[in-house]
Image (tube, rainbow, N blue to C red):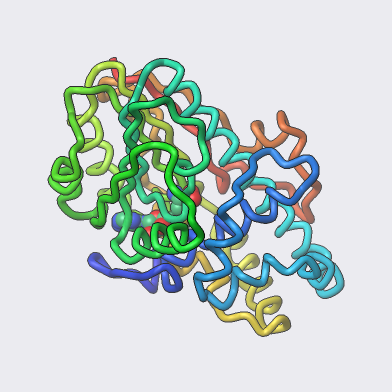
Length: 311
Ligand code: SAM
């Protein structure tokens, strides 16, 4: 169970759960610079550079990988693995949205959008509206930063500044959402930051708001074995101390590691959706991004990418 969280905690882009959005953007910035990039996010670097987390900006330093390699080659392999994971994940959900757009869906809702720049970088058809839900200061930081750099969204973008543990459907309606239209939802990098009951409630509300033909894509929350979690925490603490980084590397303190969480695909199948899932490690292998790790990866600790259609 998370020790840093409360039922009504708030944050900005540089603190607590907000800073995890910067971690994702840092991974996207790194991926974008690779010759064999799976995704290109031209805005990730700008968004990381101004965030002020004091940790994730370090990843923009081109010398960083070499520094880690010298300090701890096993930690370097884990960092490379994390980068590959994020790239494969973004690639998967980009494809999901391209298919939803090809199928004619024009109403998009990104739950916990963080620094997701899809509204700015995907090739949305005319008439598409992208609703982004996240905490107010996180949304504010993204739009203000991109505006300052002259970056405009491709689709009509509407911010819904609200916490997903509260009455977010009312805020979504107020922003113009139309429940009679099919919607393509996304919950990426979110479920691990919600307790199990809040996850169930979230999907109940999404289901109520989903007209037939709606779609959803979800990154499930993996559950790591306690000993592995502890080993990982120790490794990153040692490593953060050596590099003078703050303890923000300890994501485990922010997540709800709930072993009894509902299985997302099963839940959706039982509630009027038809779901399918791809295990993240299989998708990484398919895209030739499964690097060798010090220990065999624990499949249960990794997510499944679930997609579903509303019947
Ligand atoms: N989905 C984005 C992506 O994959 O790039 C951001 C993922 S980031 C790891 C987690 C995001 O979830 C943060 O932006 C955080 O503010 C948001 N978040 C977590 N819990 C939330 C809640 N209860 N209400 C609104 N946003 C939440």
